[in-house]
Length: 483
Image (cartoon, rainbow, N blue to C red):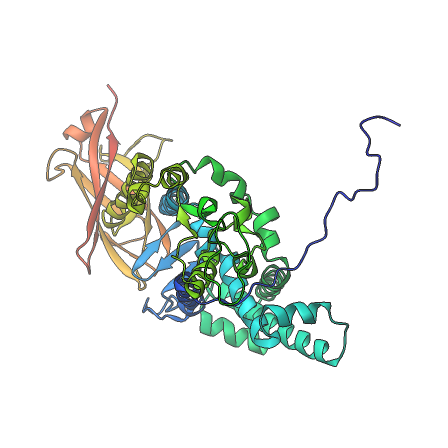
């Protein structure tokens, strides 16, 4: 046998030990309840907010219209060629995550990550059905009987309903919510809708009900990436062992024991942790800095008459400082430092650039392509004709008429040039609502005019919305007779 082969039967995989977090009250737990309520409310309610978009589009405030490749967000409409707005938002999201992690560790994981939010909701339902920590542990170890079956079926049913609501809300973002709901109830919705809801329901049920902390530990890469984002000024949760050790129990009526630290080894911090870790063992990959252990410890310190803060948010720099008996460093000095200021500057700069680009967008979207074969056509009367292809997008929810005109690049007029539209009697073209129209344009230069006698002349084609008086232009060239 090779010396590198294992010589015992030690398992390489440890079975998951279920985590049953205890209910706790405190400022951080209250903050998590508020954030959970707001975020779940936004997620479930947003698809039902109405916004008038005219007769040709769904009246939905937030809509990802995959069929027509558009994204609607209240008064903002993003078209396929404007995908750089989405790319900018994704970059902002990444920089925001770097900023929050550099400033306060895994604060995103502890308060706003969807896995955390839905797990909190599932644990709340579990606690409502099965009781608090001790009752849930007892039920878990209990043999299957009528009580266990009844409680488990009730809990799983509620979980499935939450998962169904989650999956349903997700598909409502991609089509008109009231219409899709009726189609779903009548069995006439597309197979893709039913499959998406089924998958989202199953994953929500499994991740929030059973996987829970396993998703954070094994499936999510962020716990391993975050180390590169943190430094000695990053705020995270820590146990002040120089104050709490040596730990020991207190007898009834005692408030202190000589030679003993403030920690009474009550395990309250461990009992409330949704990740099932003991923060007193130091920084651990599993910690999501949710602050529940702080609430539990502060509550216990209040009961025994000790100062709060045995467990709290602090930076690595604070350890040496506090061990020396120096005053606690203000948390804002940790947060506002060159690294976080740089992240914020980049984040804000991209945000400002996106806003500026959004408001600088032309309400008229078009482009002009000159014909290359042939460059020009000699007419029977001696005039020279250039042919152009105009692609004009109507961004309005109703049919819109546009007027087409030409000028020279450096003058207000274009003497000697005449414009005509293929298939149109005048100089206007009507584009259906939310459609892209292709129109062929003919521009003729009179014999002897400067446009006819020059090889290339710069011109500008103008498109004007006759109803809204919006106007836009695009530069191109007119090819004259070669000499």
